[in-house]
Amino acid sequence: MANTFDLKVIGSRKTFFSGRAESVTLPYIDGGTVTYLAHHENTVMPVVAGEMVIKPEEDDAIYAFVGGGYIEFLGNEATVVCVSVELPEDIDENRAEEAKLRAEEELRQHQSQVDYYATKANLARAMERIKVKNRHEI
Image 1 (cartoon, rainbow, N blue to C red):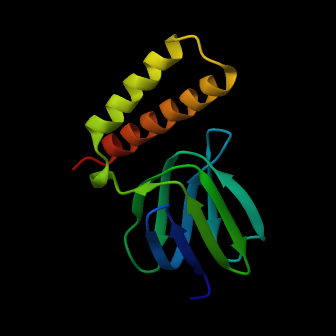
Image 2: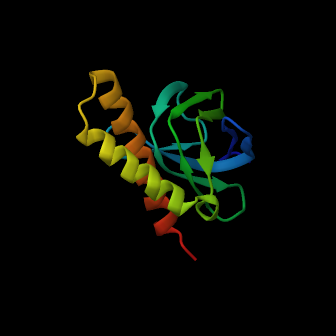
Image 3: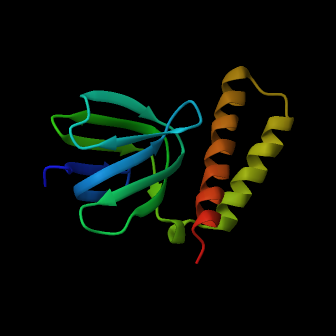
């Protein structure tokens, strides 16, 4: 128990994970990842769309797509709050592919700057969903 911490991952529709973990790895804004271990320095950090890996205490790793949000790590307790979180087998690849195509088409249209950045974010989420799904296909 000394090398674990309390972890809760909360999506907009449900609590995805709640329990003891050895680590959680999250996508970071620089295109890389950040891994949090027990007794991490207190922090609040942004999370971008990509693959999350949870290593539960005495169990196999859990891989999932995570949408944007943040992690708060305080006093050996971590909470990840995100827009969406899905296991690879729950990702609807057709829906993600349609969202990707729709975003690519919208990028070809003349848009306001706000719409352009929203469309870029939609495209990034769709592409990350597809990557996570394909990486863990059974």
